[in-house]
Image (cartoon, rainbow, N blue to C red; front, side, top):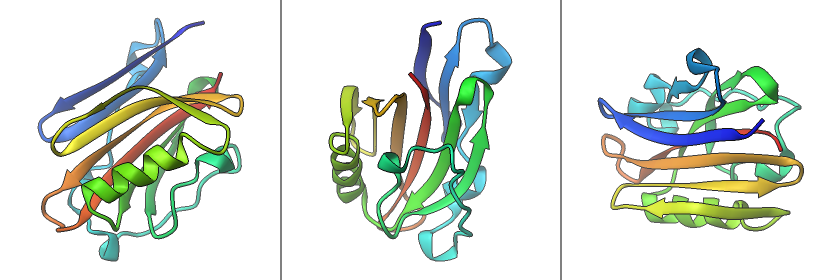
Length: 147
């Protein structure tokens, strides 16, 4: 079944959606509200599940703050980067354009960016947003699932 992808900004929080047609209730997931105001130094880390592709692990120093598993093997990861927007963008572009991944349909604006990725038997989308209240930190959301 083809996947629909989208990224919507609303009320200052990112809504990340990667779902299949006909699953409206399961398509939109707000980024963890605590991450929107939590600096890296104050974030409580959680572990990635074993089903998450190791080739898509966030770079060292990033803190994963929330993980959700969804239908059809999808995993939503929310976290915070200890780096500013430009450095976080470079990190994610590097992570998801190497290690067997290919980036597509990306967009970069002043304080937010997103891109689709595929490879390693998975596909998904990542999104980042500058975290104004934590100078030099950036929120990160990744959703991935089997191809």
